[in-house]
Amino acid sequence: MAKVDWSVDGAVRNVLLNRADKRNALDGDMIAGIQEAFTKPPGASERLAVIRAAGSVFCSGLDLRERARAPGGASSIEKMLHAIEMYPLPVVGVVQGDAIAGGNELALHCDIVVASTSARFGMSLAQIGMAPSWFLCKKLMEVAGPVITKKILLLGDPLPAKELHDLGVIAFLAEPAQLEAEAGKVIQRLADNAPMSLKTMKALINREMAFRDGIWHHDIDDMVEAVRTSSDAQEGIAARLEKRKAKFQGK
Image (cartoon, rainbow, N blue to C red; front, top):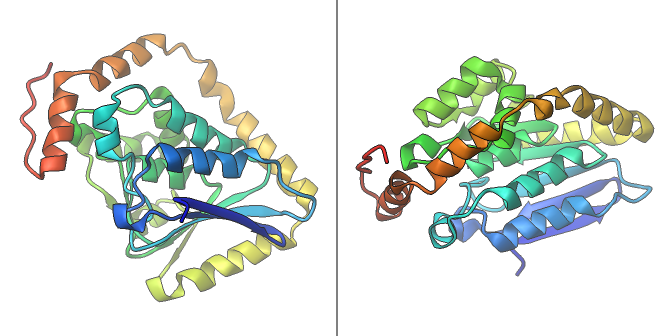
């Protein structure tokens, strides 16, 4: 069974994260599968795409065992998320459970999020000695604003979906038993709208938010890379895998 399944059903391109036994942690195959789903142009009948996940967890982020084996940059994840962001039609994320680190970014790169009250969103990178790239932090800033971005990044603790809904970070909230019904309403409303309008509006929003791409940030990129390759990062990943408290040395 594929780790990512996707198909088109009428107006909807359905994308399923299908690695429930690993909390839908993103490995190379999953990243490639998601990118493929959002790289192929939509057909004439399509109006939107929907991302769901199997199991109780939406996505726990990058598979740390894979990260420990290949401690390179985040370029593959960034390309995948960029494909979602630039997909010409609206993308709905149906988040039934925790969306952490890369999973949080995956959810927030969707145009509209419908989340369960049992879901939590967070970026635990500071707790394992890592830092987000410019691209990933930019999306948090766009969606959540500086105050919530700092709370998410600097503390690293997951925030309940209700808190983010109340702050306007995610669009729709539902009790777990009503999640699919609520998502179905949103999906139908989008499918009923004019496709040229949807494409144009998404392009408008993306273009108007692109100004941060032009800000000089090569020095920040160097800082992020230094964090990724630090001894603290190696210790943080090892500690998380071994389920113990990390002992950071600041180097």
